Length: 156
Image (cartoon, rainbow, N blue to C red; front, side, top):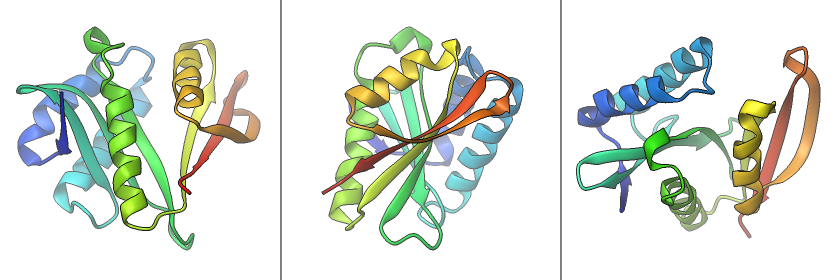
């Protein structure tokens, strides 16, 4: 498996991957694609896109970027893995590479926002295994019964 920066030539594969994610609702898919397009249009300005590949096949992607007005803090905006490739380490490889790059750049923290619903239980377990801890919870944020969970990991 190889992790590298995504480029414009990877857009079609990333868009297809976004479309294949069953727990992403239609508005989430639209925003994920919007962030991906912004990342590909101006890489390194607001967003940093990474992809995990098995040869030419995109197994997963991640987009992170600096939090405005927060020194050394990055948001992990989107991470998604091909449903057929889950459990093969693509998500872990993406997060580890993003964290490696962020440490090298002097970042202090990574922040993730996700929801706490049955559809996202595997997501919450993934982040817990990666060392992210719940820092805040906003009840019924996305809709009734869908809490927003803010997870944080210190990079020091």
